[in-house]
Image (cartoon, rainbow, N blue to C red):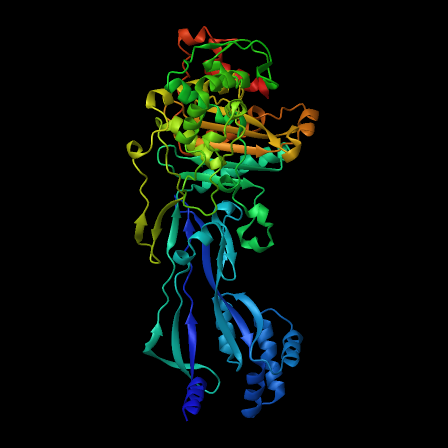
Length: 583
């Protein structure tokens, strides 16, 4: 008897799932980056349809006419549906159309065809296509499978509801009792620190540079150096989040935080800065560099690209001398080198609110030897992510503090009411990587990089940019380091007098042979510095940041120690001439 009652109840009632609506994702200005539209899938119950037409005294001709009307509504040929019905006559569920909007669904309902049903479905869409793809991630049939869509799956997805209804002989709902209705709990909306306009600028410049130099891949990050807000984070090549299933997992990887590399010369500010802060050297100290190569001990040889002769600490950074940096590293000693790197956050995660962060690698001090001193001073024998580098460089833009990177700005409920807001930690409460006076000093030195150093020609005539280039040989495992393959990097910030933005850009494995054949350089100063500088310029213009005054020349006690010093290069006209000559 109990089984009979249960069977009767199932025949007279049905439980319908009420889909929750997935929360949207917006940039910091309110631009939609990921949204949800509710569509419907139409299905047939072939057995019920045939039974209904036969039991109600209708002819199969009428059934064919109904099928023809349905086919017209969903833009299919009648014979396609007839064939489906014939092939699966005993089936109770045959999907015939997906992603239908409300207008078409209402048209189908008016046909009142027995055995035709609809299932509501949420369809995720990305109105900006590939912009922000590696941050957003994407969706699979069971929810988010990459990026923010995966990390915040529960908050974004919400929870489905349900209703239990009485149905008639044609399976149509008649009524629902209040106690049988559980409303859906719609997902929350995510607000990012990202600025879609800056993100678009960064992606455009990164893609153009990678394509120009036929590089294998590249990354770029733009941050607010005072708050840690990530304004842009991009990888190249990119993808469309809407077609994530078709994308190679290696392309989907957010290498900005998940793939560390040996940074080369971009590590030098984080060594020379502490050396000056700890009074182990001075900006105007002269280092006895005699030639393009130097043997610090045994068979170890350090080389420079150019033979500058003796260089001050100032110019060791500006000209990116490997020999000078190795001498500074030797004076510091391994314990101080190790302490400097850890102080800037290397060797541990930044704890950004994203999945898959790699901590990089700074080996334990007891594993360092004489070779480590030389290698680390040049940016080898350690691994860092582009995010770690960019975050560390923020310290030179904000007075020495190590900011907490973040991409989440806040959450709104389904009705748009504020649920939570992420407040950046006050700078004075953050760890100090270097004292404010030393940070300001290094920042001023690095402003010379763009007017008379390794990024000469990438300076802006509107804003003073400070930065550091890097070109690291790519390791080929047991075969050692490649002589022709490089990672070309640039760290920068602007305006130097009041930094609003910091950028990190890495372009991996530009084609050296092609670059040489085109008369182009393949070092970081030529490959990464120009596009990174353009990102800063375009972003500052978009943010309407006032133009910089002319960069003041170094004080006389510094100027007299500099190689090929010319005060004219600091003027707007001098910068314009240098940029024009480089083009």
